[in-house]
Length: 144
Image (cartoon, rainbow, N blue to C red; front, side, top):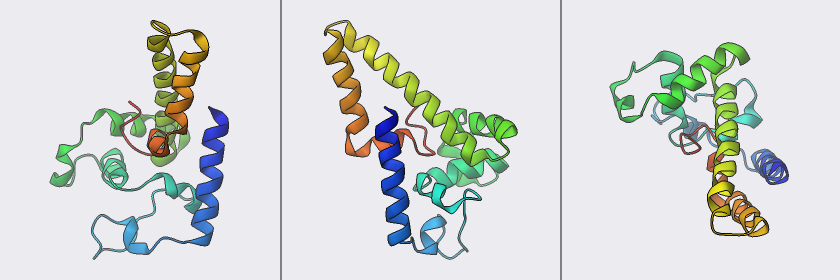
Protein backbone atom coordinates (compact mmCIF):
# COMPACT_ATOMS: atom_id res chain seq x y z
CA UNK A 1 0.00 0.00 0.00
CA UNK A 2 2.78 2.42 0.87
CA UNK A 3 4.66 1.73 -2.37
CA UNK A 4 1.67 2.65 -4.54
CA UNK A 5 1.17 5.91 -2.64
CA UNK A 6 4.89 6.80 -2.82
CA UNK A 7 4.90 6.04 -6.56
CA UNK A 8 1.88 8.31 -7.05
CA UNK A 9 3.50 11.09 -5.05
CA UNK A 10 6.77 10.89 -7.00
CA UNK A 11 4.93 10.75 -10.33
CA UNK A 12 2.82 13.75 -9.36
CA UNK A 13 5.80 15.76 -8.12
CA UNK A 14 7.76 15.09 -11.31
CA UNK A 15 4.74 15.91 -13.48
CA UNK A 16 4.14 19.11 -11.52
CA UNK A 17 7.76 20.15 -12.04
CA UNK A 18 7.62 19.44 -15.77
CA UNK A 19 4.08 20.73 -16.44
CA UNK A 20 3.23 23.52 -13.98
CA UNK A 21 -0.48 24.18 -13.62
CA UNK A 22 -2.01 27.41 -14.83
CA UNK A 23 -2.94 29.72 -11.91
CA UNK A 24 -6.61 29.77 -12.86
CA UNK A 25 -6.83 26.05 -12.13
CA UNK A 26 -6.31 26.81 -8.46
CA UNK A 27 -9.49 28.82 -8.01
CA UNK A 28 -13.06 27.68 -8.61
CA UNK A 29 -13.68 31.19 -9.95
CA UNK A 30 -11.22 31.78 -12.82
CA UNK A 31 -11.65 35.55 -12.51
CA UNK A 32 -10.15 35.53 -9.01
CA UNK A 33 -6.45 35.13 -8.13
CA UNK A 34 -4.99 31.71 -7.50
CA UNK A 35 -5.68 29.90 -4.24
CA UNK A 36 -2.89 27.75 -2.89
CA UNK A 37 -4.18 25.21 -0.43
CA UNK A 38 -0.88 24.58 1.33
CA UNK A 39 2.35 26.37 2.02
CA UNK A 40 4.14 23.65 0.03
CA UNK A 41 3.23 23.82 -3.69
CA UNK A 42 4.24 20.22 -4.38
CA UNK A 43 1.49 19.05 -2.02
CA UNK A 44 -1.15 21.13 -3.80
CA UNK A 45 -1.36 18.42 -6.45
CA UNK A 46 -3.56 16.51 -3.98
CA UNK A 47 -6.11 19.32 -4.06
CA UNK A 48 -8.19 19.70 -7.21
CA UNK A 49 -11.81 19.92 -8.30
CA UNK A 50 -13.97 20.00 -5.14
CA UNK A 51 -10.97 20.24 -2.82
CA UNK A 52 -11.14 24.01 -2.96
CA UNK A 53 -14.72 24.03 -1.72
CA UNK A 54 -14.00 21.50 1.03
CA UNK A 55 -10.90 23.45 2.07
CA UNK A 56 -12.91 26.67 2.18
CA UNK A 57 -15.54 25.04 4.38
CA UNK A 58 -12.86 23.69 6.71
CA UNK A 59 -11.29 27.16 7.04
CA UNK A 60 -14.27 29.56 7.05
CA UNK A 61 -17.31 27.33 7.45
CA UNK A 62 -20.24 27.70 5.08
CA UNK A 63 -19.50 31.36 4.28
CA UNK A 64 -20.26 30.79 0.59
CA UNK A 65 -23.79 29.44 -0.05
CA UNK A 66 -22.50 27.46 -3.05
CA UNK A 67 -20.70 25.16 -0.60
CA UNK A 68 -23.95 24.09 1.06
CA UNK A 69 -24.12 20.98 -1.12
CA UNK A 70 -21.10 19.47 0.70
CA UNK A 71 -21.70 17.32 3.76
CA UNK A 72 -19.81 18.75 6.77
CA UNK A 73 -18.11 15.62 8.16
CA UNK A 74 -14.91 15.78 6.10
CA UNK A 75 -14.35 19.56 6.40
CA UNK A 76 -14.96 19.34 10.15
CA UNK A 77 -12.49 16.47 10.49
CA UNK A 78 -9.93 18.47 8.50
CA UNK A 79 -10.55 21.58 10.61
CA UNK A 80 -10.14 19.81 13.96
CA UNK A 81 -7.15 17.78 12.78
CA UNK A 82 -5.74 21.09 11.55
CA UNK A 83 -5.49 22.26 15.14
CA UNK A 84 -2.85 19.54 15.60
CA UNK A 85 -1.00 19.99 12.30
CA UNK A 86 -1.43 23.74 11.94
CA UNK A 87 -2.58 23.35 8.33
CA UNK A 88 -6.12 22.18 7.49
CA UNK A 89 -5.03 20.99 4.04
CA UNK A 90 -2.31 18.71 5.43
CA UNK A 91 -4.76 17.58 8.11
CA UNK A 92 -7.34 16.73 5.46
CA UNK A 93 -4.78 14.65 3.58
CA UNK A 94 -3.99 12.78 6.79
CA UNK A 95 -7.71 12.21 7.40
CA UNK A 96 -8.05 10.89 3.84
CA UNK A 97 -5.06 8.59 4.29
CA UNK A 98 -6.35 7.24 7.61
CA UNK A 99 -9.78 6.59 6.10
CA UNK A 100 -8.16 4.94 3.07
CA UNK A 101 -6.27 2.54 5.33
CA UNK A 102 -9.54 1.77 7.12
CA UNK A 103 -11.31 1.24 3.79
CA UNK A 104 -8.60 -1.16 2.65
CA UNK A 105 -8.92 -3.11 5.88
CA UNK A 106 -12.69 -3.32 5.57
CA UNK A 107 -12.44 -4.37 1.91
CA UNK A 108 -10.05 -7.13 2.93
CA UNK A 109 -12.41 -8.32 5.68
CA UNK A 110 -15.42 -8.34 3.33
CA UNK A 111 -13.49 -10.12 0.58
CA UNK A 112 -12.26 -12.62 3.17
CA UNK A 113 -15.87 -13.77 3.68
CA UNK A 114 -15.83 -15.41 0.24
CA UNK A 115 -12.18 -15.60 -0.80
CA UNK A 116 -8.90 -16.98 0.49
CA UNK A 117 -6.35 -14.56 2.03
CA UNK A 118 -4.26 -14.10 -1.12
CA UNK A 119 -7.27 -13.22 -3.28
CA UNK A 120 -8.57 -10.89 -0.58
CA UNK A 121 -5.22 -9.12 -0.56
CA UNK A 122 -5.42 -9.03 -4.35
CA UNK A 123 -8.72 -7.17 -4.13
CA UNK A 124 -7.05 -4.52 -1.98
CA UNK A 125 -4.09 -4.36 -4.38
CA UNK A 126 -6.43 -3.84 -7.34
CA UNK A 127 -8.16 -1.02 -5.48
CA UNK A 128 -4.84 0.69 -4.76
CA UNK A 129 -3.49 0.20 -8.29
CA UNK A 130 -6.64 1.40 -10.05
CA UNK A 131 -5.92 4.60 -12.04
CA UNK A 132 -8.38 6.73 -10.07
CA UNK A 133 -7.26 5.50 -6.66
CA UNK A 134 -5.34 8.74 -6.12
CA UNK A 135 -8.70 10.21 -5.11
CA UNK A 136 -8.51 8.16 -1.91
CA UNK A 137 -5.42 10.20 -0.93
CA UNK A 138 -6.57 13.59 -2.13
CA UNK A 139 -8.46 16.27 -0.21
CA UNK A 140 -11.79 14.58 -1.01
CA UNK A 141 -14.58 12.89 0.89
CA UNK A 142 -14.35 9.67 -1.12
CA UNK A 143 -12.09 7.89 1.37
CA UNK A 144 -14.69 8.32 4.10
